[in-house]
Each structure stands twice: as C-alpha cells, then as structure tokens.
Image 1 (tube, rainbow, N blue to C red):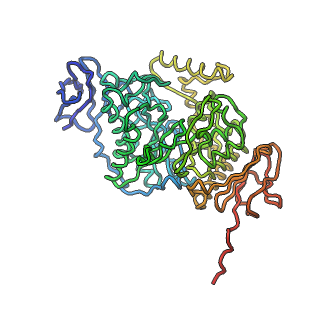
Image 2: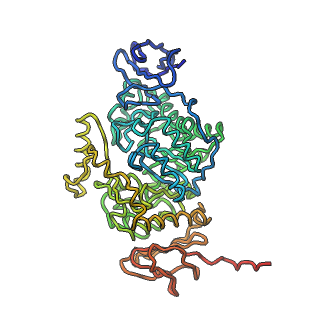
Length: 587
C-alpha cells in the first residue's frame, strides 16, 4: 500500500496518478492537497501526475528520478534501507576541517560509490566533514548541481538514493560528518514544473536566476513547508549531519518569522527527537551576524555562516587583482581585520557597493564562521576556472593554506587544493534542450567579456570536454611537486587538530599586528604566532613577546633570529611561544 499525496491548488478540475499503464483519479483534500491510496503500489513503483489532463509531470517531492528530470518518479521506502552504522561520532564545527567536493569530478567514476573509495584518504588528510555540492536531480548527466529541480531526489547519474545512503554510512563508519549543499533561493530552468502545481513562486521579487521562490506571498505556508521538509528529509532519511544553504541573501522573506529561523527551529526539534546534532550553515553576502545569533536575541539561530572576506583579502594580496568586488580589498590591514573580526565590511563604507555594508560580528565565536582560500565559486566562477595555484604559484598557495588553517574560523578546503591539483574547475552543464544549452553558452561568454577574456578562450559549458577537464587526476597526488604540497597540508591540519589554541573560538584571543608599507603581518593565538610576508624580497618580521621556536614554514629558508622572523619573499611561518609562566619543576 502506498499513499500518494500532492499539493496542487492550481489544478482546476482533476489530478490524475499515472502508475505504469494506469491512470487513476485522485481525491481533492483540504488546502489544495490531492490524495489516493493504491494497494498495489510499493517501493520501486514508477508514477507521475496529470494536472487537468496535462502532463505527465514528476512528483514535486519525488524521492527518485531514475531517468532524469523528464522521466517518472519512483516510490522510495526509506525504511527499507539497511544502515550498517547506527552510532557515529562527528567532530563539532569548532574543531572541524571541511572538505568541499563535487561528486561528478571528484573521482574518475564520478559517483557516490566511487567517492567512498577516497574516504580513507580524507581521514588520513585530517578532514572531519565532507561537504557535498548539491546532489538534487538537475538537467542532464553533468553539472554543478545549483540548478536542481527535483529537490528530494539524489541525482540519478551519481547513483540515486541508496548509493547516497551508502556514502553517508561509509563516512560515518570512518568518523566523517557529511554536510550537503541545498539550494532554496531558485530552481533550474529545465524540468522546473513546480509553478504548474501551485504558488511556489512569486512576482513580488526577482532574482538573478529567474522567478523568486514564494516565502511570504499568498500560498507561502505550503511553499515554505516544501523547502523545510526537504532539509529535514536529508537530515532524517539520509542521516546527513548538516545542510549548507546556498546564497540565503536571495531568500526574500518579510515574514515575522523568517524562513531561515523556521528551518533552524524545525532542525533543532528533529535533533531533540533523534538525539543527533545537526548543523545548519548559511552562505550569505550580507555580512550579517544575525544569521548565527540565537533566536532570543533576534537572530535566526543557525550554527554557522560562510564568510567570503578572508578569501577576498588573501586573494587580492596574493594576485593583485582589483576588478569587481575585489575593489574593496588588497591591503594588509584588510586581511588583519578579517582575521581579527571575521567581517571586514561590518558597517564600513564599501567602495564597490557605494554604501555602508554589513554589521559587526559581536557576541559570536569564530566557530560560527566558515572561511577558505578556495571554493567552488571562487575557482569555478572565473572564466577559465583557475585554482589559486595557477594564479600565484606554489609559494602563494602555501601562504594561503597556512593563513586559512591558522585562522580562528572553521577552515574549508576545496577538493584537490591540498595537492595543488593541476585540473581547473570550470563551469559545465548538460542541458538536453539545444536552445537552453546555446543560451547558457552565450551567457557565459558575455559574462566574462568585460573582464578582458577573449570569447574564444572561454570554455563552452555544454562541451563534455569542459567537464572532463575539471576531473581530479589522483595519480599526480603521489608525484612531485604535488606530493610535497600534500604533506604540507597534512602537517598543517594535524598541527591545528593537536594545538588547542588553533581551535580556540574566542575572537578576543586573536592579536594581530601589521606593517602596510613593508607588507607583513603577525597573528598571535595563545601559544602560536603566525608571521607572514607578502613582500617581493626577504625581510625580518618582528615577533611580539620574545623568543619562539619555529615549528613550520612555507619555505625552508625561513628562520628565527635576533631581529624576529626572517622570511623569504611571499612566505609564512608558524612559531610556538614560550609559556607565560615557568613550567613547574618535576617532583
């Protein structure tokens, strides 16, 4: 017996259930819902809906789309999956090292199953959480996943529902947490049928990606519930440990209880019911700490938020780029503020925006924020998808890694950065509709024309070669110079995990000094001091509070002398401070 339910208030006359060769009439229920009990339908049955005779359309809450966005939905009984690990211990965010990966290009196989083969490597690297780029069903067989349309269905090309569960189960067996990117600010252009069923979208607002999702207009109660139930499904039925919400600044909601607060509240209730901790993390360009403030203080109660400011500050100092939003960055003082205060623009005037931006991150801790020197956006949204290594070389990439992993915030790595992967990460799609595919190609070329890139050099997103070019080459991780970079990352992550001061979330314990003209910076966090030089020539960087022991450097010629830290050009070093008081004598 399977009960089919669908919210379809836009259906004027009838909703039909297409089950194999049968078409069965559904009964109208209250609130725009339609319902039908079918005794002979069960786990694995394929079905679709007809709306006033039009269709068939996939179920908006389809748990599986084995034939892609235009095929029928499949009934999935989540209780039928045999989990192997009912208990697991995942590190809290405060001591975490996150690893963002794209399932399709992470391994040669490009599936959930092939990702399992690399989990031992991630554990050895020191990673605590795997963060999956979106896996909800999207157009074609390859794509970034941010244009998903069947939000309840793990992508068929990756292996579908059971394969994702096996990946999560395997992560938990190794002590790895799993965070999943979800996209609730828009849907993709192909296979998006939600607007046929009900008022999932509103004309009150507009977004860069098309129709705005309805979070506060007529009919928004059920629309909000659709997205919140989606997040709860990943946490409950797939045992995901947290969700990362894409671009929440584009979730437009003037309700007294904002959608984000409602989602966090429901996630916390599920946590209470299951006895498991969940992390709800937001990506936002607003520099607004209210995302992580408790509800009692007027916040949304999320566990953490991404902050781009550390990335921007690092990127501009290392590359010298000043186009677009990078206009606001490039000074050593700006990096110092990002390390000390998280948000650089916390009510300050932003020349790029032409107005004051952000709010001070007060009464929060550093583990409320995720930072990085690279991620899918900052690499993949460049015209050629260059990684930081391609722009600044190994010396600059090591400096960025040391700063990111020594910073007080939660570090995130982007797949392959730890071995200085040679593969770019480019933007790729696989739209079956030739007109849509051509439009995406033209739009991508137009987007980067103003940056001075020749149109003919911009990879075609629709070309399979663009996708294949972005796959990681795992063989090179064991070859020089990649193997040395990998060892450097392993050492850095291990140092962070074994040094309590490096995971201390108290921002008041961060002491930063800098010299803008000389282009150096130091950061002290308890027993550890970081010294960085962005200068083109070797120089001595004064170290506060007396002598130290050099424990790790990006360049082997770095040393400690009477004048402080002697650093080669574009380099960084970590020093251990002497204890504040003499150690007690042994008995």
